Length: 64
Image 1 (cartoon, rainbow, N blue to C red):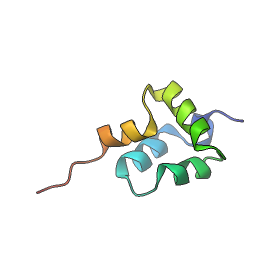
Image 2 (tube, rainbow, N blue to C red):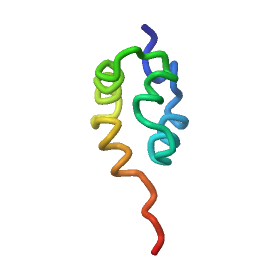
Image 3 (spheres, helix red, strand yellow):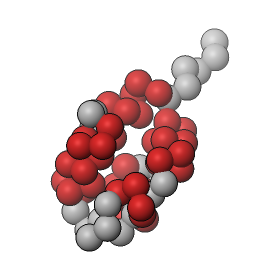
Image 4 (cartoon, rainbow, N blue to C red):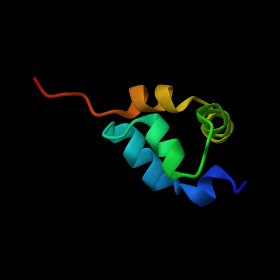
């Protein structure tokens, strides 16, 4: 299996995760992962946080 960054370039992953438009499961599938656990594990190794935590941290705040 190719590394995550080769299949889902970092700027793309960051934009998709922080934008919150697509589910993490859908992002994993688009990157060729059959298992969300494997996607989460590799993302954690590369970023030091889970995709969910990354999304929560970098998602734009809604304007009041």
